View 1 (cartoon, rainbow over the protein chains, first blue to last red):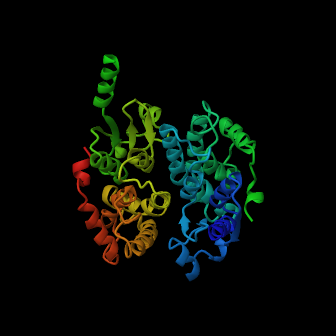
View 2: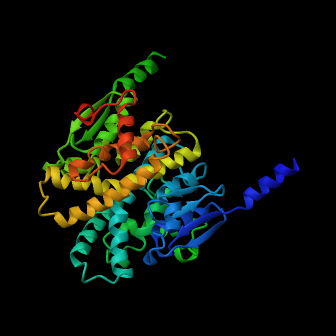
Length: 217
Length: 217
């Protein structure tokens, strides 16, 4: 009995470990959800610019060489930010139990990784961290056009609903907030998207919300 | 009582409707799962090359202008192929109930849409359907390199496990099969990836498996 209690206590005390770059919106998503669900976690700064995700040691943990990477309290590793959101939100109010609302969460999470992040995050990275506005002018033009199209799709949905699924804040909002709130750092203008701008404020008003600077590090 | 029975029967008779292009691996994924789960569906051919996903009528159904698009028996629309897989596999043997095995399914589904499909599917599209091997030589070089890296990540996992999650065939395998089995149509050599090639055969041996040509159309 006492042994079990000890084991149980040790498991509770072992925190999640989140390997992340503090500038990455994908890493922020996971830190934000861990924070909202009051789970203690250890942040392990992993500098993408210094190729820290391509070392032999890191590739042993994640063969795809990317952050974020989540180490669970039992030692296992999970990759892909939106997979972490789904896993960590199970049984919590941030993931609907209704099958249709849940399907919509899935839909927006894949939209984010396919049509949104590859445009908004990459434009921001090229401009803000690599300082390549001139050298990558053509590529940035395409990324900004496609990024604005993705924001247009979001704006249409948010014009008739306060959040992306079931009228309530969920991990779909967390995923899409991450690189939408930094869109202008990549030169993508948010001013045409009224519903998106109002939704950004709603997300920031969610109880327990923490900013990227507060969550990562 | 008789009214309920009638309503129930009508609902059963109304099939799923899948808007898809018969050349698209993303559309094939959904058709394959619908077939494996013995759900009748109506295929609505939607020609991407003819911009059929960008018409006013289509954008009304999916503002993101992409196929596949699934219309549920109740008339609602769901976008994003991997969201459809998760929704349609719920409660079926193709989606694990174990939380860790399920997390791995999520991980591989996002890997597929972020690190795999944008390389393998786009290389295939440029070469096979747009005939731009020469004009897009530089872009193809990058896509093929990144595509091979994704196959390397898969190969590492498949060297110690027959399938991607829990040692059993799941929607993670369906998603990754779609554009892996057509990799060479985009000029990406599968011969270095022994475990991947053996896994392709295992997927094709799953009871009820149907090919892309059989499933789409």
